[in-house]
Length: 211
Image 1 (tube, rainbow, N blue to C red):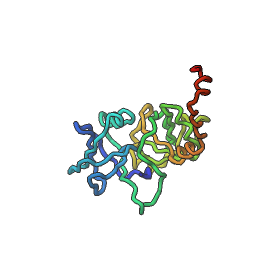
Image 2: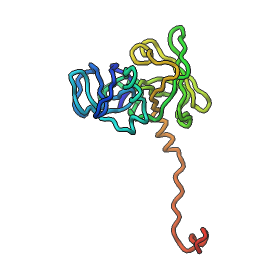
Image 3: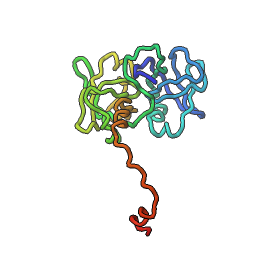
Image 4: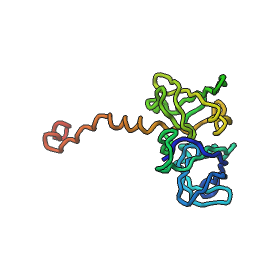
């Protein structure tokens, strides 16, 4: 688990055995979990200037990691949450729900207004005003959204803007999005239970055309 509070910026590169992350992010050990642009990766090898992680084709296809490694390579990094740590952001699992696209960036007097659209509008049901969302692993608060949540905007303070990769993002860039865990669990709990399976009998078979 993570909090969405970025602790370092690293450089991502593809390697024959996954990805390589160049970083000075604190002491790491084999098997540690690190959120890389919001994607939970496991340290498979310690390197003098960072670490190597194995990444499946599934993960590369469902996130922006392949794009980051092929372009500027700058990624947000956060080590896994310890039980004694403060939860300054919100609970983030490091499992990307879907991709989003930055549709607008506006410089305001004391912040930046960042507008994002889900690639799959269905995920908009997890978004509402003042809800939490993880964008490239950054814990952010939704300032407003369209009625269906498919497009939303956030107010980014200077500390977050300069302390993460957001300052380098441009309109049209794709980003990793993870909706709030509480929203997803709430939906699961409130979903009507599935109808009980019908008992196989001669009457059931006749009713469905088998008699």
